[in-house]
Image 1 (tube, helix red, strand yellow):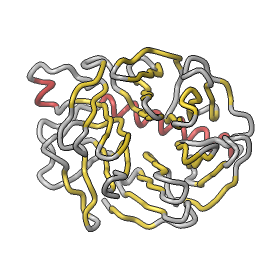
Image 2 (cartoon, rainbow, N blue to C red; image 1 turned 90 degrees about the vertical axis):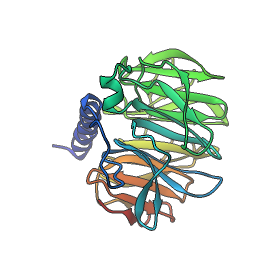
Image 3 (cartoon, rainbow, N blue to C red; image 1 turned 180 degrees about the vertical axis):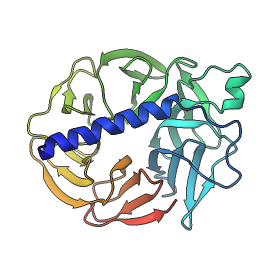
Length: 282
């Protein structure tokens, strides 16, 4: 099997794993100890520098290498992104006890403006489960696992766009109509806000990608290799490597990277991926 075929298989398995997570029912009560469970999202609040971990049992910060629950919520956050200082978007499922009591199984798009302590409904409550969320200026994109569609919106109104099988989305405020998607067939790009996607020529097979500046992209491949582009994805430079497959990844900047591995560990790089250190161990 060629290296690209091996990486494509790894990416396809990651998509299968996420689908399995979506099918899981959260326990009626979260573990007594602070435990994110499966990690689905990472971010850093630009207001405080705090690192956030979104997982199967709620939202957590990392304090001295230990997870600390944010607020009292225990929702399964399948999607999570930091939109700005103290402002987050998320999606996923309510706790199982709420579902058993009659709540719809999907959160739709929710938003917090107090750094995750409380959440308000934005759109598609009860119907959408966004596994990938991305903010580009005033615009928000989401990939709904229930319909396989990309949704986009501003001001709380979402509209459905294209349909495809993807793991991650990336867009930037400089060109919010340009949207990247990582798929088992390679990176695809849309120039019309997610309506249509075409292969991004020359891009390596990637699991997660982020826009880190004008024409700048930082990404991680299924084998943990970091890749960076400074010309909007036309050419790429391979860098360091995380020694595990990432199940969540965020490029806070071109040099500050966060990655979660399948074993529940979280890793941080402050040198653009040349090296990583574990900041949370399972």
